[in-house]
Length: 401
Image 1 (cartoon, rainbow, N blue to C red):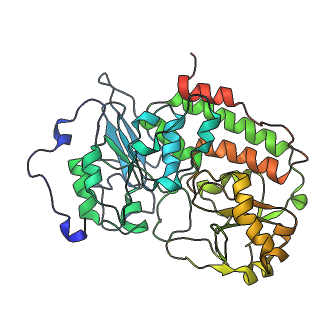
Image 2: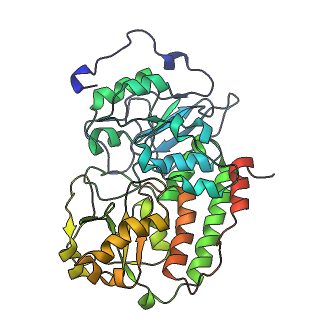
Image 3: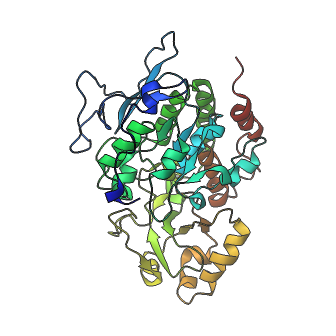
C-alpha cells in the first residue's frame, strides 16, 4: 500500500474500544510516554499521562490482572492480560518469545530468510513453524497484513517502519495502532543509525521487557542465570588479551567479491557474544564505519588485504548453511582468489560464519559456545559448554516452584 493509500479504514468504534481478554490497550498519541533526552520529533505525551526514566516499568497488577510495561520510544502500554497473539518485526524478538515459552503467540517476521532457526534443532521440543509466520516485507511493508493478523500487540519499534525502511508515515502508524493494536519495541541489533536518537537496550534489557509483557519473570531469570554461568565459565578460561585475534565482521554472501563491514566493537545486541570473547575490532583506527541505513559502503579484497585481519566473520542470508557448506561456498572461493588467498585469516583457517544479524537470547548462548570453540579450540575442547536439556526444559516446561 502506498503512502497515498493510507486512509482510515474504519469510522466507528474500533476493536480496541471493546478490548477482549489477552489484548493490549494504550491511550493517547503513538509515542506516548517517551522518556529521556532522545525521542521522536513532533510527538508528545498526552495530557493526563505520566512517564518515568525506568528502563522497564511493571506496575502492580490489579484484581483484573492489568499491568503496564514501559519501553522507549513508545513509552507505556497497559495490558489487561497476557497478549495471545504478538507480531514482531525482527528475529531477535521472536527468539525472545520462543525462549519464554510463547513461540505459539508469534504471528510475523519481517523477512523469513533473516531468521536463523537451526539452534532450535538442538533443543528438545523447541521449534518454530516459519511457514506459519506472516512475512511483513514484500517489496515494501503494507498495512494489509497487520489487519489480517489482527494481533494483540505489535512488538515493533515504530521507527523501524518510518526510518529504517521509510515505508510508513505517522498517519500509517496511528491507523494501525488505533484500529488493530499498539506498538512496543526498540531496534537493538545495531547502534549505527543516526535516526535512533532515543534509548538503546542491551539484549537482556530488551529480553527482560519482553518477559514483563508476557509475564514470564521466572523463565527469564532462569535463562539469564544460564547465560551468566556460561559467560563466567568462558571468560575465566580465555587467553590474555594480547593472545586473542582481532576480527573483521562483514557481510559477504557466497563467492564474495566485496564486503560490507560491521563493527565488532559496536554495541548492538548481535555483537554481544563477540564482546564476551574479548575479540578486538580489526577495523578500529581504519576510518571504516559499520553498515547502517546511512552507510552502505563496501570494501574490496585490496582494501581488506591492507587491513589484513587475524580472522574474518562473514555473514550471509542463506538459512541453515552448515560449517561444511560455508567452507565449500565461501572459504574455498577465498582460498582460490588471487588476493583473497593472501589474507592471513584465510591462510590460518580463521574464516568463520558471522552468525545471525538479529540475535536473540537463545542464539546468544549458542554463539558464545560456537566462537569460544572456534577461536580457542585448544582451550574449549568439550562438546558442549552449556546444558541443552536444562535450557529446553526451561523453554518448554517453565521453572519448578
